[in-house]
Length: 294
Ligand SMILES: [Zn+2]
Image (cartoon, rainbow, N blue to C red; front, side, top):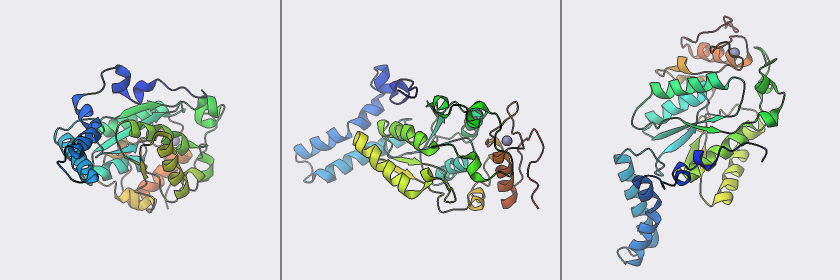
């Protein structure tokens, strides 16, 4: 394999451990059987009615029991540790969703600091409807080679265009693993904080539609990829972040001893975002401000 998959355990812990998951998982997994039994016994005249009622009963029970497994009712979010995906987690929680944050380690230069930020943000928002951060592994260093994202050398500085920070196939890589995780955990929706202004090929609507089809073909399990911020500007997304601990998020591609460098492309974008919406930027920058808004 071109990449390292750290065993099925990280995708399907219950199966890999031999425990078969918890009782709650067994109940969720059996909802189709429940529906079939109801049909066969003649309790309900219609198969779909029976399946729907059985499925919903399991969902209601699972939510009431606050089980930390896929119950078909929650939504997974690809959390990068940056502003947009962190705000998306907060927004979905505000909407009453049960949220499963996912972080994918890819062996990129800034990853340790980014992951630490993601953990801090999730901990700060801790509540019954927010599951613990799930960390998956999908290294790309063997794929990207000497790319700046792996070496940490000559990273794009402030003032460089968006294209300078493009990571080849980033969304394709992340979504395959995250999508499969959702399918194996009974979570039918996966959300990304991608904005409509994202200019790259793996961020356009057609890409997500084809990806949904491909994953459904691969496993037979439906999955919907959602982009709630696709129709919003950066300013509109930042507005939704008011009241969230955004200082705990992380955007830098050249961190220095765990803090934002203040000089790279992503630090400049971060500073511009805070300034544009009039929010105080409480981020600690090692090199001072890279962007001095007019
Ligand atoms: Zn930086």
